[in-house]
Length: 334
Ligand code: SAM
Ligand code: SF4
Image (cartoon, rainbow, N blue to C red; front, side):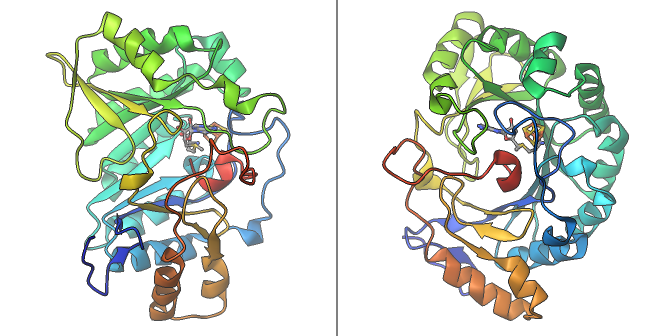
């Protein structure tokens, strides 16, 4: 059991929380088939946290010992004036890593500004290098803009850039090797993610589309010389392999086949300010209500610590008898 000082977040399982994923919008310029429905009803703007509220939440969590904040969404870079949030978070003493997950569509415009604001790590979602398949998977995306965005991020010189690819049966299983080669050639990392069944995106057989990380690893090992890396503290749910004599690492994120709940170190705040204790579970409190009720930072801290007592031991994606998770991924920030 981890001993915690009063200013730190430790849950009843003894897991120290030092990583916050902050969703800044539920809106997006893409409609990825595994993340959103084609027609989406987005939150009314008044229900979404303001940039000032987001910055305040970031500051409160860093005061509680959070060392890493990842900005996500929806697509964070479609939110107007989002650079002001990065600017504010980048100045927080105690924050070691400021990260963003983006679809890359606006990255060529934003890369150098993000670097200037203190963003250290960028994850860019990229499921295929085939233009037509890309359009099918994202419904509205333009692959060339994303590739330009990746080049801009590389040129801006971030500490770490990782591609994220969700692999779906029959759709992009054969794209695993080309994506890996693309990452290796650019000296960046790549992670393959098992699809998680969230929201009612596709009425038929949600859970059946994911490709197991074991199958992906087998494919990778046939083509690349990979050495498993020891799990790193705070690496999150990804397991990594080093590509021989190259700088790139290949990661696997396996919510189905390798449960990572025991080492979970994270909390999520949704775009509407719900503090989610677990991605696969509906337990939450509304930080937006606390903020808008005029509570002090100390009162909000106390409410967060209280809520943490409810953090579940593990997620429930693979337990059919449990209630279905009806949130779309864009609403909870991936
Ligand atoms: N729009 C940004 C992007 O696409 O990178 C950030 C938000 S997106 C929800 C964050 C991550 O979640 C992306 O890497 C995306 O591929 C992943 N994702 C979305 N839906 C998913 C699902 N059902 N299962 C697994 N990963 C998913
Ligand atoms: Fe948008 Fe990201 Fe969801 Fe795709 S995965 S629809 S880019 S939020």
